[in-house]
Image (cartoon, rainbow, N blue to C red):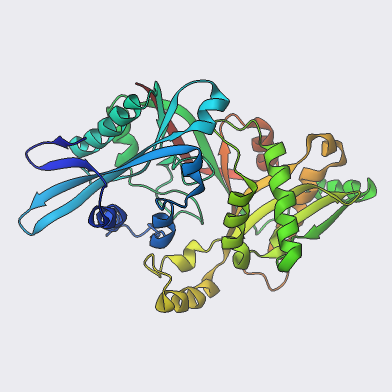
Length: 382
């Protein structure tokens, strides 16, 4: 499938050379953007390897926009069309996805990329397309639509302001918004949160930091996986991961976890809740230029000393334990762990939270969080 104009062509990625061009597109788009954090190139490449577990239940096609210039061919955009069968089975309709979208500031090229992805999805029997979603919402997803004045935190998306402008101009509509909350750590939590912690302890709930070594880490991750799937089973546009996928992702992050800001709640020896957060390693990753070779690792270790903020990824507790104030107690412990003596954290970001997740939003806003970035997923009928 090839779409061609006088100045560029859209073609599927079918060779090693094409794949290298595909991976190099972001470095062209964000060359002069002070807020962009280059992703680790090997991590992106791994997602298109035959060993990616996604290929056991899904299919994909990569496309690149190639411009013929005086100095040779140059990739000026990219997109991936994907079919996630688990999402189709869950939602009961043929929902296709687009992701990994990057494009120079040229609407004609952006429109051609989107059209090509839609044509491929239509050929696969899809009737709706949604994105940006890189295979699933557990991976990179969402366009930033408001809050371009600061860099993204670890594992959060970032894009130029013209991306949402282009996709809306192409006739896509909002499917759902999500928010990132800013939480400065220079003020104490309301007293209700410490009271909730005391109530939880008196109710028989115990708390401890996540284990980060050996079998203890593996067991904690398996318990978090079970709890995660139970608590977030009804999340919009979400599909369950296998335990093997979850463990692989956790092992990649194992050495980055700060147990002081990752408390776990237990009742009768069973995990019933957790506060999942990470230091903002984007502060260090910004300096490695997407490569964790020996020089990149040295730079990462040097600049990680500058990390003074963190991202809260999830606050989770089983519904049947809400009266025991587990969620509020976890917030209290997570925030207290971040501001204890010797810790560098000055602020936290709680992200991302869907706009219609009112219970979580109410909890975050009660603890002092303020929306400072807005993200969006778009949708279009095929």
